[in-house]
Length: 315
Ligand SMILES: C[S@@+](CC[C@H](N)C(=O)[O-])C[C@H]1O[C@@H](n2cnc3c(N)ncnc32)[C@H](O)[C@@H]1O
Picture 1 (spheres, rainbow, N blue to C red):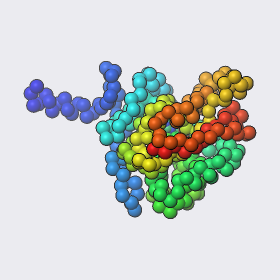
Picture 2 (cartoon, rainbow, N blue to C red):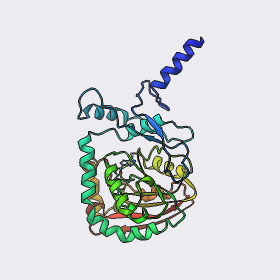
Picture 3 (cartoon, protein in one colour):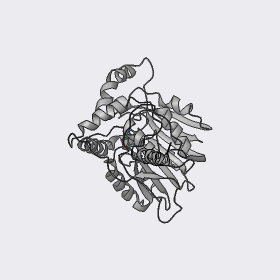
Picture 4 (cartoon, rainbow, N blue to C red):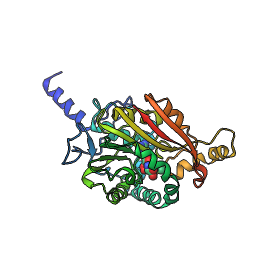
């Protein structure tokens, strides 16, 4: 190959990066990347990459219909777990678009506002469990990543700690403003809170970069539970902890389990991919943590999502 051809090939590759794809077509990287510093007052986390621009709209119309089609096709591709040391910004964006195909803005906003306003009774009932659980964070958990942070209902439990830094991961950018409001209400300075648009299946943080991971009501919604757990494990420091609260399938043979099975497809459609029949506790127990302390609870006010698991897993 001549020197000139080699240069041309390199340039083309940079414009249309899609890594790890076994398929013979390319998806254009649709966002630019900027490395972030975790906060001005602390050591920057190396290799953290954050999307700084919204998804580029396609050529059809502003309602995003084209993205639904692109997303539907892309979501058939297998998910490959990333390794941050090898992955680039375009990997995270590619997996984000594959796992959580861009929805129209109005839909993302609608879902965010519904979550923001409809969870109050639930949060009141679960608060006793959450208070105890989040006590485990202690003073040493200075870098916390929350996966599927949504509107930030957990920040009140750990955000007031003087120098905690929080990375809130969520594919729905419209959650950001609610999460920031929750951060401010919790006393967490916005300089110490970073919302990152990404999915649990490909987290744009370095290996062993956080002291703790928090996840509540999110493994019901991710596309690949095991890939997400692998990513959580990867970003956790050795000795780090993962705190979880998840709704799960009711016991086999119960009427509630039957109802969950019947309503599961509808739930996925109306609740942005939320599954009712996952046995998430089993996934967590098998994920390779050195120890898992898991409890089952049944909430009285949560109707078809009453059965829960919650607990703490140690890396
Ligand atoms: C039911 S809400 C729960 C939000 C929040 N954790 C709470 O406890 O209220 C599920 C959240 O998971 C997010 N989500 C969906 N798919 C995800 C994925 N693949 N990775 C990470 N978060 C995801 C949604 O955008 C939403 O914010």
